[in-house]
Amino acid sequence: MEGQWGWLKGGVALGLTFLLAVTLVKPIGVSTQFVVADGLVWSLFDRDLVTPDSTAKSGFSSHNAYLDKSGGKYAESVANPINYGFVFVLAMIAGGFLSSRLGERRREPQVPEVWSRRFGHNHALRMGTTFAAGTLVVFGARLAGGCTSGHMMSGMMQTSLSGYLFALGAFAVAIPTAMLVFGRHQAGD
Amino acid sequence: MQIFLAVLLGLLFGFVLHRISAASPQVIIDMLRLNDLRLMKTIIFAIGLATCGLFLGLASGLIDVGHVSVKASYAGVIAGGGLLGLGWAISGFCPGTGLVAAGAGRRDAWYFIGGGLLGAFAYMLAYPWFKQSGILDPIAGGKVTVAATGSEAYPALVAGLPGWLIALLIGIALMVIAWRLPANLRPPRSGHTATPGHPATPTANTAG
Image 1 (cartoon, one colour):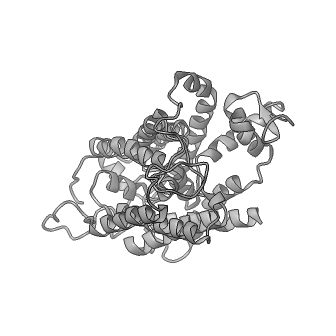
Image 2: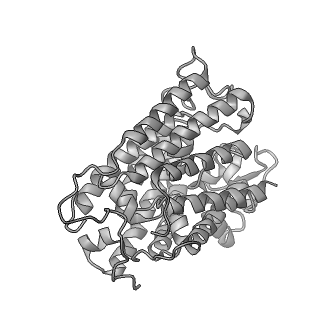
């Protein structure tokens, strides 16, 4: 990895980032924006997906029940994609790009070593499995109402009960899964 | 102004996630199989620090209580967390770190995002079914916090004591846990000096 920070420096930087966001605007969250992105694509094919509606709290409603929930707040984001949450997430991609270009330029293997030691260097296998895992991750995040950022970090920062419950559910599955799939120890580690 | 802040804070968050190695599936998987807990120390410390800062900010009035936004508790939070955990462990990405890794040039992260868009779409269609199943019904009071935030909208589980006090106790406990947590649970094996999860040298298979 490129010029990475130690755990304490990283922890301070990450904590201050969450603090700055809640001070200036609101707690950080990510996974909702996958829904907004889908809504944008969907609305290209279906012009009636979101429509102005003066009776809705947000001013917009949708024939999709999920976009329509909570007074149509997701419908509003689809209607006005230049909003805080969506631009924030796009800027995150740029932030990753920026960090990877500054400082040392040491590339990690495209197929992670921990993966290739177990499953070999088959590119399609890694990409296909990662696609399927992405489906599970965001479906799970939407069912939970948030992801690692919104529930675990922002939620636990506010001492939300839901943040602790989410972390419990995520780690209770993720730790045994990682151990089973990739093994506890690997030669050469 | 909001859009300017979105760009600034999004850039900062993406930059920091990349710098702490959270956008590396290698590091995530090594954390989850308990091989290398440095990222775990980072995350726990960050949550502890942010907890202390937030509640001190709320108590002093530096942080607007209207910025507090608490999500509801329901059975689906745990079930959804479990589904996320499954995909997280297999891929080494969560929604935020997948985006950052894609920005940093990881091709597998773009596949992850593609899958994520499909998962979000599936949930958009499945939502009415989950809604009527009862799995989304609030439990334990719904939108509650442990420490009192001062917001009328979110009741506190510990109501008798000042929120900042409870939050400081939790926050400091988390920071102490982060401090004490060993970076590596396994004793080092003879002949290997390289740190697991952070390969000292780039390996041969960088192609693709």
